[in-house]
Length: 178
Image 1 (tube, helix red, strand yellow):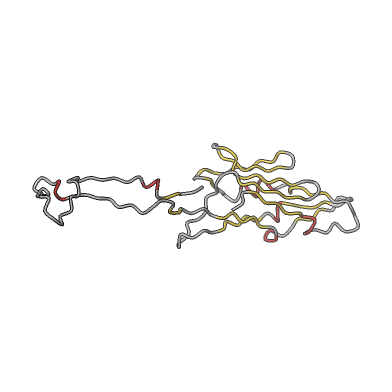
Image 2: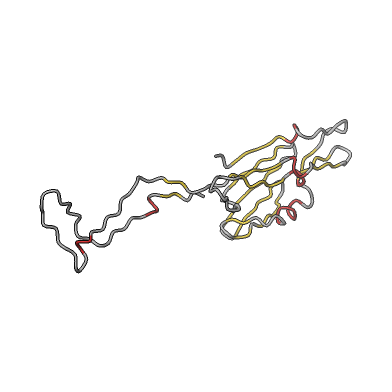
């Protein structure tokens, strides 16, 4: 899936007769986002506003960037994973973040309107583990035990090597993703 997306808010809001409108984050946008309690790899994501950009980050780096131009282009960039609630069926799920209430349009004479919370939603798809390796077989042999019988080399007898230990690196079989 994509880690970036954008939405033209001019297709959602109508400024009306008091043209030209400008688009901006609401005064409480950062407080609202911080109140969601989002985490990345178990660390709290803290949001901060700089100019027309809100960046959510942890001590490890940036996680999510929201940019809103005066002309109404809302852009989103996912830079690291955001923790999702565990899916009971181990299926990919969406984490919905309501962005409607944190963006607003202000018309020429200062009237402001923000969207209802559920009208502009950012869905972040969960990344679940996948099998990426080839099937593997681990092999141990009772012949290697202290009281085991050694292979005689008789016709039809499998010589399994006499080893009582084997190992397999599961990181070559599974990919946990982001």
